Structure formats: C-alpha cells, structure tokens
Length: 279
Image (cartoon, rainbow, N blue to C red):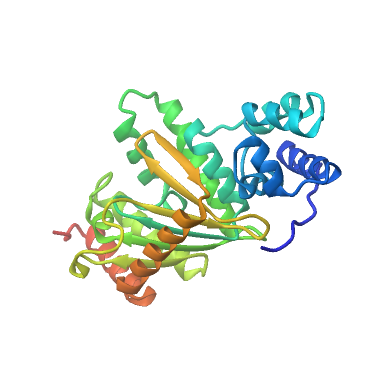
C-alpha cells in the first residue's frame, strides 16, 4: 500500500484528527496494525481514520486517548469531526465517497445517487418518506445533488457504474422524469465523467442478483465496501469480503453491454419515454 500523504490540518476537523492520530501513533512507535490490536480493529481501520476516509466515533476516540496517552484530545474533538447532514447510516459512506479515487457501483433497482436528477431523486425520497414535508424533501434532494459535485472537481474519481435494465424500465416519477433522468446519465457519460454499462434482461443470471455493490478505492487507505439496505448501511474493510465483491463487479462488467452499446440503449429508452412509446 502507498505511504500516507500529508494532510492539511486546516482543511477540516477530520483532517486535523487524522493528522494528529498519525502523529500520536508514530510518537508512540506503533504501527497501524499494532494500534488496531489495542482497539480490537484492523490496521486498515486505523489507516482510514488517519486518511480521513472514515469518521472517528466517540467510543474509538476514548480508546485512542487511552492507548496513545493523549488525555482527552480525541474524545473532545471527534464530535465536531463526526457532524454530518446525512443520515447516520450513510454519513460515513458519503464522506468516504468524497475521498475516493475510484468508485465502482452496481445498481439493481434504481439509478445511482451520483447520477440522479432532482426530479428523480425527489420521487425516490417521497416513495419511502410519504409523510415528509416538502421542505424536508427539498433538503434531501439538495444533499443528494451536492454529492455529484465530486464528478466535476479537480480530483474527480473514476466512477464506473453498472445499472440493471430493471432500474431503467421502472417508471419512477412518470415518463418525462424518466426521460430526463436517462438523458442525464448519457450526458454524464458523454462528458467522460463516468463509465456506464447496462446489464440487460437477456444476460440472465449474473454475479450480483442478491443485491447492490459499492466499492471505493483510495490513494492512501485500503479499499472499502458499502453494504446498504433500507434505512441502514455500513462500511466493510475486511480484505476477503472486499476482494469477493470486487470479483463480482468484474463479472458484472463482463456480462454487461459495452459502454457504447449501453449508452445507445439508454438514449433510445429516453426517447421512448419522452414520446410515451415505452412499453
């Protein structure tokens, strides 16, 4: 694994904690693995805290203060670093997403969040928050749209998305919303901001029929896998689990349509939706 890069402590509370954690660990003469053993976590988990790709939770902050003899520094400061506008189960994934150099995702049931339009996202949110106020939905949509800024940034990640045809056929928000949503996917891909492939119905059984996949790679920390279900989710860094899911994603790309054929299909479907000819 590549050595850790220098962090700018002034950039964010999380960067400060990461830099201080690395400094305190090295001062004690401990490797990431050795410190991880004291906290009953993996060395890669420590690396992710130092790299800022993972939030420091209060329980680990207290254990770090004990292990590194830093009084209550991490316990006092982790609360500011842990603040997020996103739901608790998703906050770590969003913040890891912002640090990732590559994101590989398989979406079986809906267009991935990074590729959604406001109208499509609003329909999705309304479906599982039917009693939410319009103001709350506006806030949720704004947060989701804000995530997409990483695609146009100076350190934009590789985004490689495989979408099941089922997600494209499900009329979410009406035909005009779907037409706009699919055109947007094509536009993002045409701007070279994402690689998009479609798993067609004709592919039959494939390697991830039981759920979604989201893999994130980093320059200075081990890869992460985000496992998500309705209203819950967690980051997984177990090397074997990540390796297995990476292989599943590779198998998906092998049986999916090529990027050019995928965009041609999505574009045709967008036209069909726009003209209300889609079966």
